[in-house]
Image 1 (cartoon, rainbow, N blue to C red):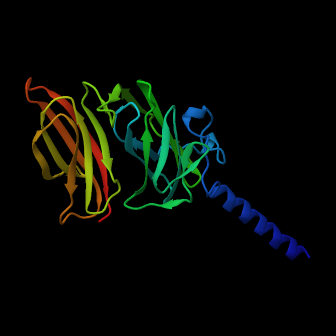
Image 2 (image 1 turned 120 degrees about the vertical axis):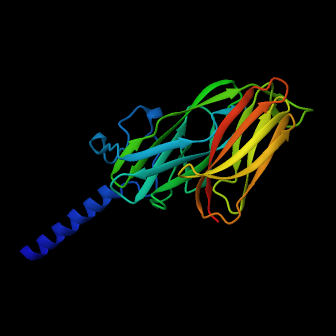
Image 3 (image 1 turned 180 degrees about the vertical axis):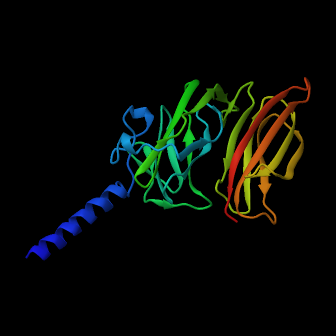
Length: 264
């Protein structure tokens, strides 16, 4: 009898430990800085670990009502699996990969194994109709350890109807992001130019090494989508750097970098 009790006690302890380590395996919402709480609910502030790296990347500027592509990357920490909770001050979040929608926020559908040292959770954010600044928040976990991301501030600029059709920003230069991302073979970098510009689009690998120049030429005003075609490149993380120079003033009016995940 004592052996049986001891065996059952071990099972209970193992079950409790497993639950503790893999708390909320199907995702959780309401635990970003937007909610003003202690972070990861199942593990508490004592498991806040700054070696868990959580970073939000994507366009800094969006036209009102426009949609941009964003990524939360979770890396580091003592584990090899990650989960995430993503929220926005105002605006709409939608799933691209590795995520599901829960109570208006985005979270993992299951713990994701690290690939190349981390996990990329990609999503889309649609800005509200009002101009101003909005914020993206994220909390990432590495099993029972977790950390916050630095909040991502997005400037929402004025937009108006063009010929009663698509909405475009007025008198602004906007890097709208890229889609699809992650991608196979080809993606497109979207930008809006208030005037015609000379645009350079260069590709770099994750170490910052120059890979190739994708585009160098004149781009007319309005929205343009510049294709990025991967040829003989290894799968992994790349950065597309965009620079636009006004053809009249000679000023650099747009400069930004987009993080690309090439699946091959």
